[in-house]
Image 1 (cartoon, rainbow, N blue to C red):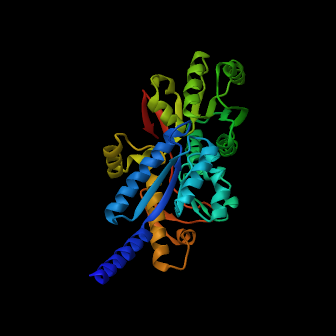
Image 2 (image 1 turned 90 degrees about the vertical axis):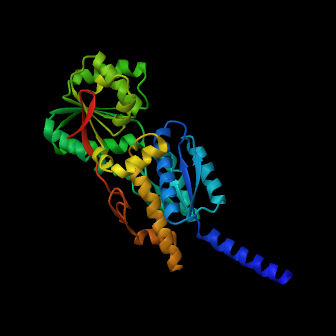
Image 3 (image 1 turned 120 degrees about the vertical axis):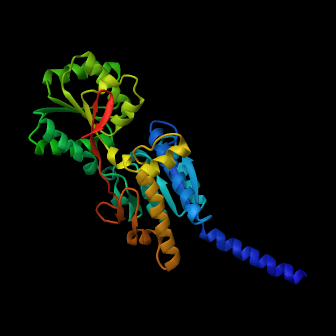
Length: 361
């Protein structure tokens, strides 16, 4: 009897170990509190939905370990070390560039795949990652493409650029400025700020008004976009406005939608709108429609899982190497690795506000 029990125990332990090895352990570092919380929440919810669907199709095959970095690089790094101790094979994070930046050298040093879904790839230093950083976030060039169509349609002669004084703002400004120059739009002024408080407005608005631009480009966070539009109305500035994707969240949360009547912006509106099945599943689970980063983040986990299964079946390649070999058809499109753009695909729409409603042009 003791011998039979020992055999049964051996089989149980063997199967348990085999089962444990078959679970793909994925760390998630996102900002669930702080300035980047809205984007972080979208990423986490999309990953939870993807994990649920993967485990439904392949039972007990993937496990997420989620950490909140509270939108601070110090906490991002602490979360990384915590996830490293849990033996995760990949980390999806972080939410914005300034938190992702601290992860890149550590992931490269520890040879852990780092996958980003919500930061402009151009604002990340891929060369520091030694090949361990991947991204399927929309590029600045793709995000700014609707701006080119806007300029062709409305033909503004002059432009003032108002942008966030950080890496995201600088990256955006560079691309949008190049587009404007190629379309022969005169750049009258470039104004940067960390945040637009009352003392800043007293200086900025008269400065803009004196230039009398036909267009004002707002590369700002959602709060500053609304503040700017309100102050511009009070100052009787009559220019057209074009804004970054953050205008969608600003409009969605605004109690003064009339402020947005002369505003157009870039957003993956049509891309998300056509995903009826995904939208329903997301809303049924989380009580809200998906926003930017939801679809490509959902795809990212499936992409990583596909690479993991390839790695496990071959036994002689790493997860990093497997990712470079994978071809995966997701919600956004067909993903193939490129040394130049990683997995970035997808397009943005030219969106304008008419009578308080969003309309894709």
